[in-house]
Length: 210
Image (cartoon, rainbow, N blue to C red; front, side, top):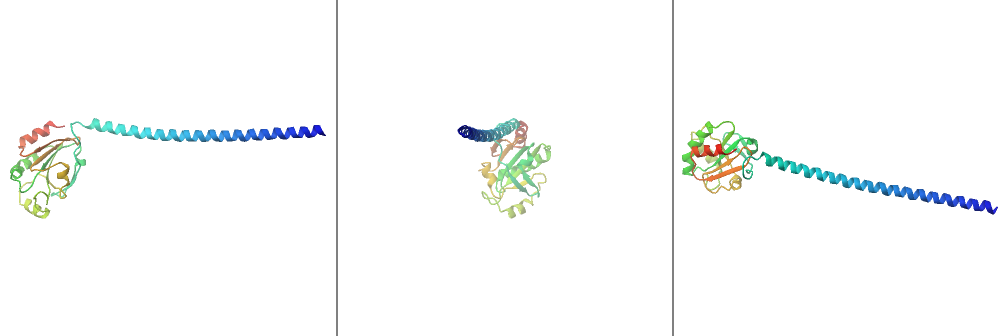
């Protein structure tokens, strides 16, 4: 009887140990799975960060490669023209751009409008000539008065865009008229010039930028 009891106790003890081992093994497996999941999440996060950083570097390198001229990118703009067209610098990518900032009260500006109009008729499709006037800014007429005044002039080729807010003047640092800005086909502001520029000077500057 005592042997049977002892045998039973031994069996129960063995079963308990097996159950404990099984539980410990299961807990160990869960801990291992948790660690694996955490590690995988860290790896996924690290991989995502690496991909984002790589993409950013590639974009920066691409932009650097595309820049053909020395200088900073020209401030973008969206302006409405007297011809009813909308002029966006971003739409002119691939073209050289000559901006002429002027005012109706500026005698030098008026004396060179004919040259600018003629130049606009001569340049090819790879160049955009655009004059900019800012109504109600720096002594300029109101928009309505300027439109009425300009309609009496006989310039058929020179686009005139209106910077009614004056924001473009600030962006390009225009403080005096006339001011010329030369933008490369890569969108880089290559040069600004304050004061008179002859038609030949403008053409030479356009030829010298890429």
